[in-house]
Length: 231
Ligand SMILES: Nc1ncnc2c1ncn2[C@@H]1O[C@H](COP(=O)(O)OP(=O)(O)OP(=O)(O)O)[C@@H](O)[C@H]1O
Ligand SMILES: [Mg+2]
Image 1 (cartoon, rainbow, N blue to C red):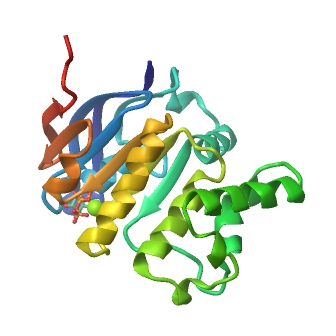
Image 2 (tube, helix red, strand yellow):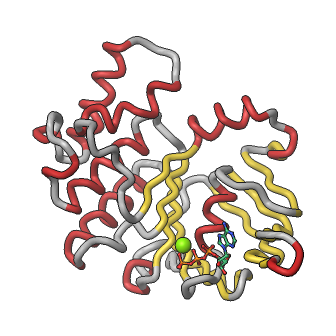
């Protein structure tokens, strides 16, 4: 089932002489339950594409159809709600709030939802248990390892039960083994039904995904499925 579709997306940054076209006609259909890697050299437009998919940024031209509806047709308010409900974001340097405990960091997205405090607490604790960091609930980010910080960030991305996880270089700041552990978490979440899109420089990470999209100079130059077809 299709979950999102990009049609001839262009993204231009800046004005006049300083204009820079970061995306040059991107077409992409993502189905529910896919595990996708976006790969390409620095500056090829990977983050720009991911931010447009996550509605953090808007395309300059082209069509973006999210869950069957053109994003242009959502109001700002509807869009914010949809973004919070649909997407979970994970970035390279975790983006945790320093002064906040692990609990408080994971609870952040819930602050924008309606519901009761007790339910939220249960939800946060369930997520921390799932990610194997329940015992770190009162720790501050500076008391955690990089891998643990990334688990907190993933717990935060999941706490609203987002359908689509968007990760920009989630293993980029981690050593090989810890990076693999984080990838294994994404794989497991995908097996449980989440749609996962991971931007990475690392071919080894990409090759463990089900589909690899290669970008070059603002364009998709390769889109290949790695799922073996069993006849
Ligand atoms: N806010 C911005 N203003 C102007 N130009 C930008 C902006 N963001 C990105 N760009 C430019 O757009 C192009 C694509 O950038 P993008 O961040 O999408 O690349 P990337 O593939 O994610 O690179 P990296 O692997 O280094 O993260 C680059 O040339 C970059 O300089
Ligand atoms: Mg980037």
